[in-house]
Image 1 (cartoon, rainbow, N blue to C red):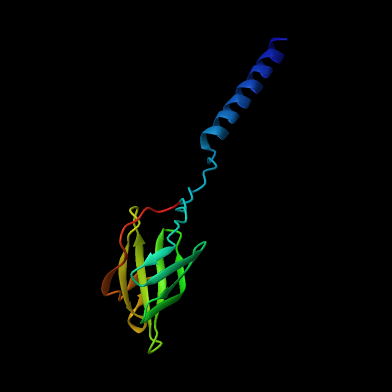
Image 2: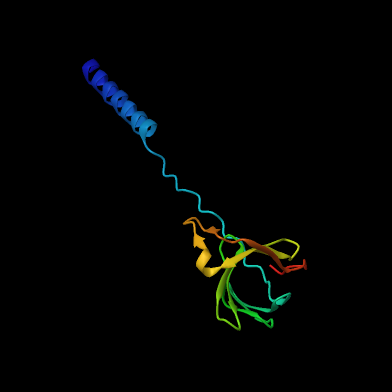
Length: 140
């Protein structure tokens, strides 16, 4: 009887030790936190380069005598990326703008042939700064 009790106690002891070891060395199931997407602000309305028309993240700007935008996007990081087209020459310029909390839109642009993407969402060659719009309240 004593032998059976000792064997049972050893069985329980080994089982507990194994369980503790498994939990001690087990890799936790941790997922990388996903960066939160900024809500898409409503930037539709007048700007110094014409009327901004927005459909979700897609943006067009029309009404300026020399420039228009048919390809524009509010990116997931909340910046506005546009392709300006010169009405007279058809020459393309790339613009990258910050949409500020006060509703102002400011950034830089550069002629398309001089602009390169840096592979991380930024652009080199944006040499001319400008204000696309003065501040106004944004609808989120």
